[in-house]
Amino acid sequence: MMNGIDVSEHQGTIDWAKVNTDFVIIRSGYGREISQKDKFFEANYSGCKDRKIPCGTYWYSYAVTPEEAAKEAQICLEAIKGKKFEFPVYFDIEEPKTLALGMAKCSAIAESFLNVIEKAGFWAGIYSSKYTLENYITEQIRSRYAVWVAHYDVTKTNYSGKFGIWQRSNTGNIPGIAGNVDLNNCYVDYPSEVKTAGLNGYSKSPATPPKRTKKFTIVEDGVKWSGTLTEE
Image (cartoon, rainbow, N blue to C red; front, side, top):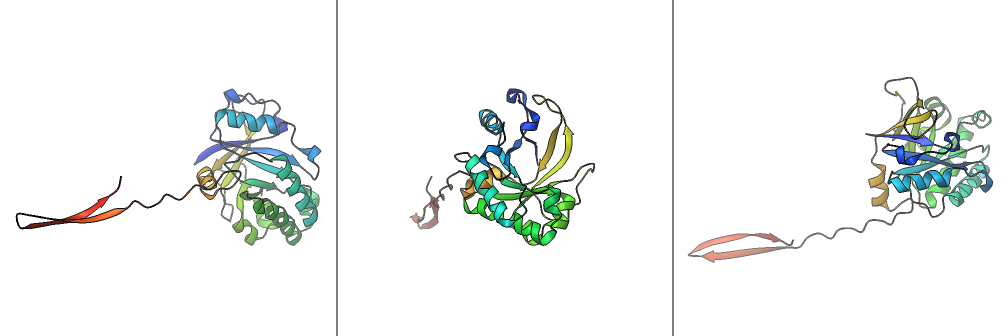
């Protein structure tokens, strides 16, 4: 298990030299305009890379149609262009006006965003509360994409589906960050899987060719010896 945090412009300027964490999920922005890119995204991304902290990103959605969600995804891709992430790119769905549309429409909105992100070569994921995921997003989508579930004030989440990250608190405090910060537990080795698959800006790891072997037989003083040698 890895312990991590997620951050946005709401945390203000972060002293990354003092931050000690296994991973970070950074907000890259919100909405359908590039002007809505998170004001601290670049600084937070650089801070993680300078400290060699594995990171992912999320985009906060206001979409109420699949078309708007696809537009948000394109703007998200523009905001993160040229970046490398060791964790998924998450779609953050929690706006009341979106949830008021019901499960079928919320699921279609989420799928539209996730599909665009995935086709661009990123590991796509969805973030929201336990209640929202279970009541507004179909099981088909929740099992198809990476899940980051928020569930506070419990010692262990009882979220009903498969998930990779559990956001367990929004009142954490760590050196280098003023005020509260969200705390997360991760149960999937995303960095290894991302790099092996060649996603999120990484090139796919070349397959290691199998080592060659050679069988041999030696006869000495009437005794036959046989075996296999493997190249170093």
